[in-house]
Every structure is written in structure tokens, then in C-alpha cells.
Length: 287
Ligand code: ZN
Image 1 (tube, rainbow, N blue to C red):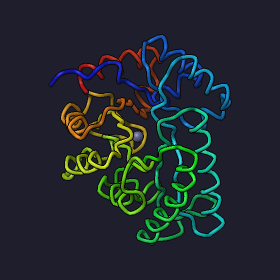
Image 2 (tube, rainbow, N blue to C red):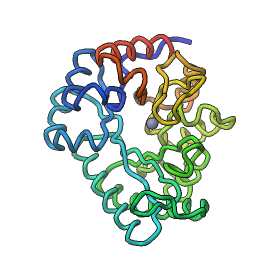
Image 3 (cartoon, protein in one colour):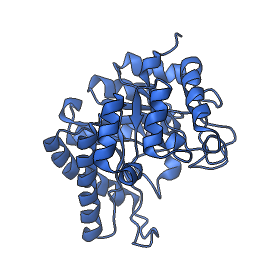
Image 4 (cartoon, rainbow, N blue to C red):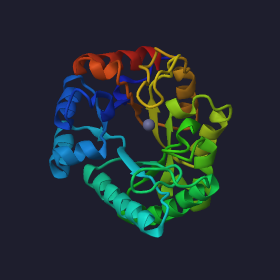
């Protein structure tokens, strides 16, 4: 399999968040000739929305996604309303940044204000996701911003996302806005879906409906020492990245390859320039 086009490399700003502020990350990407970025809302807030938008424009970066909205389930109407209001702000921020999509993490079981899970009704949580997503899609569609549902590995079903497979994300799109041209689609993050025996078919299904909005890459380490913050650099783990990329290509995905690595004990401890040059090399050699 041939190497991917280096121009398709994008960096999720979480990958060097421990080392650098968002303005520093933008400068770093320019220094390394990297053309895409996906910032997080807290980083954008810290640097200022308009300031960030201007820096990104001046640097000529493509914003492959804004992370993130979602977190729809809540124990009461007031909580769901608050989530909706926050999600509308996220859509507005994504518009200001010129993002290709707002990435959505569904949310898990409803939690109280102290963050304690207060329900065992997983099916009910999934209904709240569908309802909240439908409502947000109406707003985002009006604002011209695409929403990308990112299924998360089932180990996060309780606390982060009860949308756990690409099939589930596809079913939500089928129900709410079947043609991806209408602004509802999916983000395929290999960390979350690499294990799924149905992955190839679901990528193809999403591609036929124009809903492949984003592709996130990293690797799955064996052993994984922390479920959230021990993602591997491409080539250091067990995911067949060239194979999954070939499925994305075959399904018609022409977007960027966004490196997203949360790594408290390894990559977050290294020099930011070393991390970016490693991302460049591994994107070429191991993705
Ligand atoms: Zn992701």
C-alpha cells in the first residue's frame, strides 16, 4: 500500500495540549508544514475565539473539526436544555472558526450536577441522544455547520458516550438526516472502532450516503494502561491503519487524517516539536 499524501495530515490539538497553548500549537504546525488542525473548545476559550479564528486563517490551516459538542443525556429537562444551549454555542464557535464539522460525543448515562451517574436506563439515554441530536441538527443546519457523530469504544458507554459503534451512528443519521449533504454525518476514530467486525461494511455504508466527515488516527497499545490517556502513536500498536485507510478511500473519503493522541505518560511528556515530527513520519510510514 502506498503512503498517504503528507498534505492530508491534520493534528488534533489535544495531541500537544500538555506542552503548548493553542497559539503555540498553530505556530508549531506552521513550522512543521502541517496543514490541518482540530482544536478543543477549552483551548479556543483560553486563547479567545476571534483571536484563534484569525490566527488559523492567517496560518492557512484547515480546521478538520471542532471538539466537541454532544453530552445530550441529563436527568431532567433543565439539564438537557443546558446541554442544548451549550451545543448551540459550540455550533456558533465552529462557524466562526470555519470548521469542517463540529465533533459530537453523545454522552453516557445521565449524571447529576456532581457528575454522579443517576440512572441505569441505557436505552433511555440513547433516546435522549437521538432527541437532542435531532434538535441540534435543526439549529446547525440553519447555521451551515455539519455535525459529526463520533462513536466511542463501548468501555465509555456509562460515562462518555452511549453511541458505541459506527452502525449505531449510521442508524441515527438514517433516522434524522439520511443524506450527508444535509449536514449530519460521522467521525471515524480508529481508537474507538478498530475492533468492530462490521467496520468495513459500515464505512462503506456511510460513504454511500456522503456522511464520512472526519477520520481520526492513533494506535491501540498492548497493554493499554489507561482507558482514556494512553493512546499510541501510529505504528506503536496493533491497529492495521493502512487497511482502515484503504476502506475510507474506497468509500470515497477525501478528507484529512487527523492525529488524535491523549498520552499522559508518553507523548504529553515529550518536546512538542518532537511529537509533531514523529506524527509527520508515522503518518507517512505507518498510516
Ligand atoms: Zn476522535
